[in-house]
Length: 455
Image 1 (tube, one colour):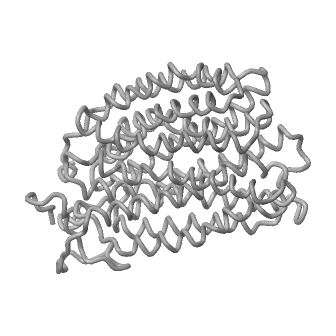
Image 2 (cartoon, rainbow, N blue to C red; image 1 turned 90 degrees about the vertical axis):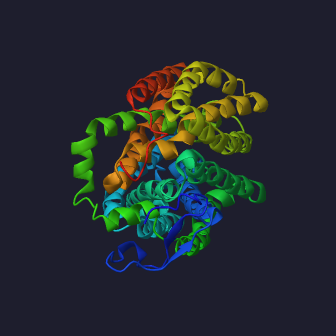
Image 3 (spheres, rainbow, N blue to C red; image 1 turned 180 degrees about the horizontal axis):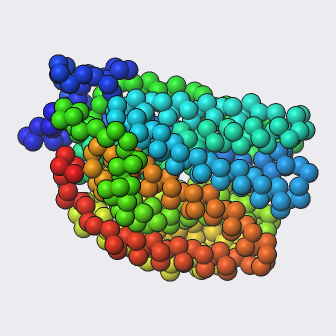
């Protein structure tokens, strides 16, 4: 059933229940109004929780996991090994995108959103319960890799479902705004993750933190997942997907169809958004490790700077998403590439001063460049792909770009600094990624006026 044109702010949906995703289309059930607030909360809360789960690992990898799970390595090698396990999550994300995208395109968005949350939560809580190398030897890092893989699979299914929940309910001229609800999840998730480690650093000494305190943020995820599960179970299937079901528009193998029919778009979109992950994880993960190990700066100060920058991200994301509704997705995304290229060298020059205000400025402007790409992306990626394989196409593009941007960047940046003794090569790397991203965005079609029900 299509959305009523006379009231785009109050879309209709099937009465939600656990089996709503697979309802028969031969006997349409009763409909009810779903408020904008409920859609916003359901799409936002899940991404905030799942990104919290994902980011506490990155923070822990920069601060403590190398010592606990790779103690036989040197300090540098232990950090590299911890970042390598961090990268496992990014390798797993496209796998999750394909799995959840397949069923999300065939049976519905809602069921996959609930399932992805549970998979992510299981992997996160398990990390908090893991024995360390001192307890079980080589089995410890192997189990860590397995749990990180589960996190990646869960997040791989989360993002695509969350942005589709928002964009497929949204009026055409407000898809950027509505898609910004889940896009604010990373900012809140990182602030919550950084805040948890900052608080622990204030209430316990280093010995207690390394012994057991680091586990608390992981175990706390269990309560958050329960909240997210409850909220998402109350949301019904999106009207765009319901209409596709009524018209029997379901792909038998979504990943095959998207590669065959829109392979070029998939490749361009993937490369275009590598920059987003590169900027975010350079600022939130690599800079934290670089500041504490190379510049010998206080970790709490660096966490505060990164959290302040994430706050800038949280404010800028919806504003730039709304701007993309007015001037187009491509124009805003292109500005991100330009700003990232221009800011790459000044950013590290300011971080290298060791001054908190300058470090905060460096990170905040970097996050602003990230927001200019990430804000419009929540609508831009779903708009590129047909409904029958939209979950798969958007999810794979987003998560595959994370392999290089998020998984490789902290590892590569750490190695570049170790081999050259300078942050200059890291800035050069960001410039190259920014230029490639801008070039790929240039070749993508503008989509902000497209009709999701006819693509």
